[in-house]
Image 1: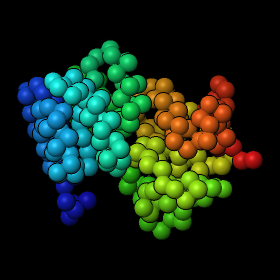
Image 2: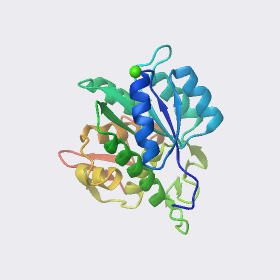
Image 3: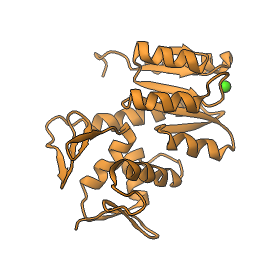
Image 4: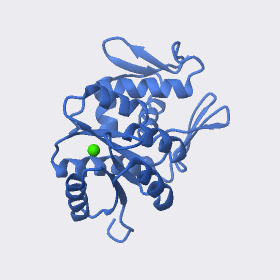
Length: 233
Ligand code: CA
């Protein structure tokens, strides 16, 4: 890690004091930090500088954080997006995850917690990139662990890093019922205190991407009161 280039984090927040505070703390933790104060500027900088991570406030003047997330999600599926939401706005969190954010933090937060979240997503992606792994294949679905790409009927389906991680758990455990807790800690880590609803949001998004009919899923089956199973039939 030490010899490698620093991970670039783009911090998007219009309130200068909060933005600087986050930036200083991330720099101290070894990240290369870029800053943007509006959504428009964030899009411009993301495209020009290709950061690995974006810390994105929802409330911005002009186009808001959700719009920025939606726009970039398609263009840069590999970008890690962590949304910042105001306290008590549950709706914001779910919306953020539904449009493809990888995680969220509720303001005000401890900057160390933000660093921990970023590192946890980065580690998860690193783990996914085990270079000698053979692709995971299930019928017409192929998960290429080397290139981090996913194909259905030989057509690539764009997945975010988190969606990829969830799907990898299923494709490595075909036919086995996985509890929500088990899935959650495998993907987000044992010390993550987010709520289990997050997982359901991800399952819905993944179904929309990979299932022929997301309301009648044939790959990811719900195991009522327990979790989910990758069906094998
Ligand atoms: Ca703001």
